[in-house]
Image (cartoon, rainbow, N blue to C red):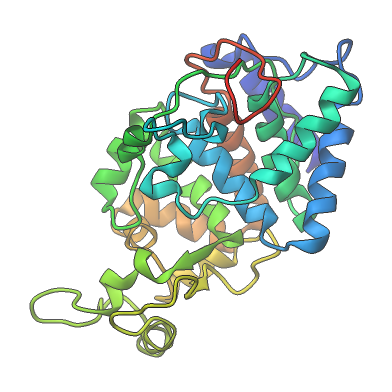
Length: 316
């Protein structure tokens, strides 16, 4: 498995034009203790907060989806200029303190050398690896962006999207249907608030209250957690039954009528995507290989970073 993951990293490093500016060896001479320092920061955070892995993985995904992986999601709003982190799709992002702590530790070792974008990419990798599944070499050399606008988060794919909308959204940043299905595996570590799936369990359409693709007892369980007109801010459910382990249970549950988001269920609505769901449900090794490949591809989208921030929340 290790050989496969290394081979995949090298394949993307040399075969994709978007990755040519990046290198897995980028900081070998300028900050040789970088990766161990970030790993330590992530592991320390996970001791007290089991939601950190899902939070960092989601944060990285949300960052890369708008203007590439440039740490723009980390920037704080300034006055009336609302930043990405305050856009509606990012309202539930958390664990920014993990990146802040990692940045402080890295700055103490290598001042002004390592970008926040690279720290976030490495932290997302380290968030997945301790859960027992894949690890990979992260190409590095990203620069931090100076632009962060809440209005741009409207580009982000919604949990209510159908497969056509998802495909269009992913293709706009150079990701394929294969990437869509593989990266959806990150939901194995996630949590969903009621507002993101209430469309499936209350007033589904004019004639049905509940999405008929949901397994009935599972739908009843969701409705008990998220009653109509729910007022509890933190009410919701985990996206699969093994929330601290990166595994293929998410895909197995999809095939059993136990998906959470409409966008999850959408993966079963075309022959190609359904076949990939079945493939990953039946083979953890195939999922690991595809997830690593798509993570490297996504994290290598670099379009406009210009600087190395000293504070990840503020442009220089």
